[in-house]
Amino acid sequence: MGIGDFNHAFKKMFGARGETKRINAARDLAQAAYRELGLGTDFATGIDAIRHALRIRNQYAHWTWWDDSSGQLAIANLEDLAREPSAISGFDRLHVHHVDMPLLEMQQAYFAYVDGALAWINFEGRFLRGDIRTRIVRKPAPLPKPAFYHPQPSYCRRE
Image (cartoon, rainbow, N blue to C red; front, side, top):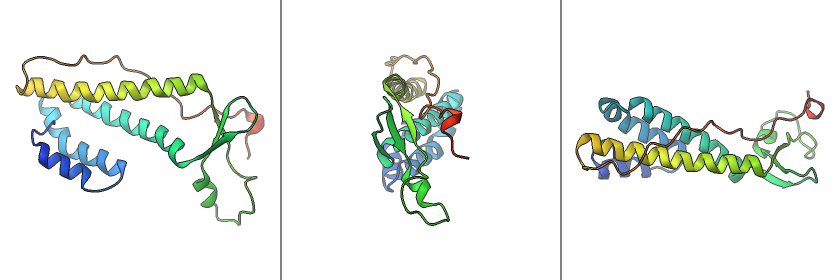
């Protein structure tokens, strides 16, 4: 909505598959327009936040996860193991990470923050441009970026 041409923005962003391509298209299309409205920093912050949320999402969509009886959810990136130059004969070199309910709740709250921040940028830009007469959405308070997973204790790290 930042450029005022829904058709062009929609086709540019959704004409190619892949979230990163879409985020880059949105950034390239709208950053100048939002900068002119005085929202350049907010827009850049929103793009950065959505990239962080995407990385969180991708670890659940593209990694494997299981109950390793640790009391936390074990997660691992099989693609990292597949990229190792030496032969793989099992999962013994898999880099296991863990998440738990408090971290999952922080990640979910961050997703809601990102959604709210992007909605605010959209409607604030439309208000400042004169397309709407009322501010529809309040600017959300910023949230710190949550971790992707819990750090491994030093005794669990493979050197």
